[in-house]
Image 1 (cartoon, helix red, strand yellow):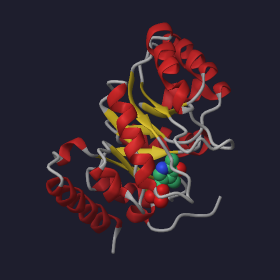
Image 2: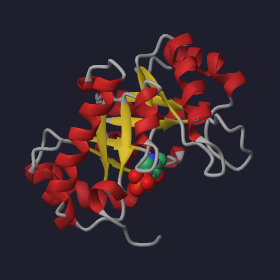
Image 3: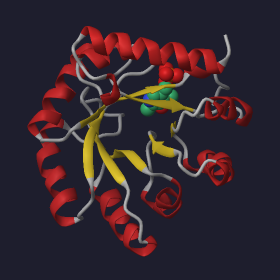
Image 4: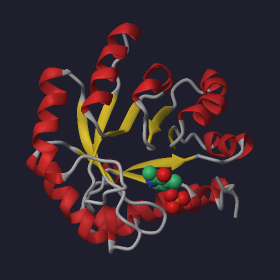
Length: 222
Ligand SMILES: *Cc1c(COP(=O)(O)O)cnc(C)c1O
């Protein structure tokens, strides 16, 4: 099947799943994860009119999207990988949404850079729902303080929460937790669900599913 066919099929699936759980399918945004995909594959997705894409690596994203965004200037680009605070200049210039806000240092750097570039992005806080030591993300018990720091002190436009469940766990536990936290924080958007578990994620209230493999097929190894 072509990338165009995959996208059409997935969009139909999203509609069906949303219908089944009484949600409006327009509240479920499909982020096409184009990391480590060839430009031609990305262009095929763009040719269908799809406008929401995700990348996890700033340098690679720049190489591909600085050019592509010239021709497709209404694309919304989501950063879904860890962002180092010394890369905020490139990140603010290139991305529209950063889903991986995960430290005070990064929040401060982004707030400063936004003023410099006179550009306001949308942010999700990445939550380490698995409490894994080696994973990025804010710990659940530190979320309220971090949110308040970002909103009140740094004036960042925080619209949602994001999580990447540990591979060894049942994702539904993490989806339920992230959903509950978003409600408690009064944030509308919830980024969770990948190719293998997006149906569950939609059932648990996801508003941003991040799909790579199911749209583009297997990608190059790192
Ligand atoms: C790569 C990636 C995805 C997409 O994963 P697939 O299994 O290919 O759908 C989603 N989210 C994040 C954070 C990723 O890094």
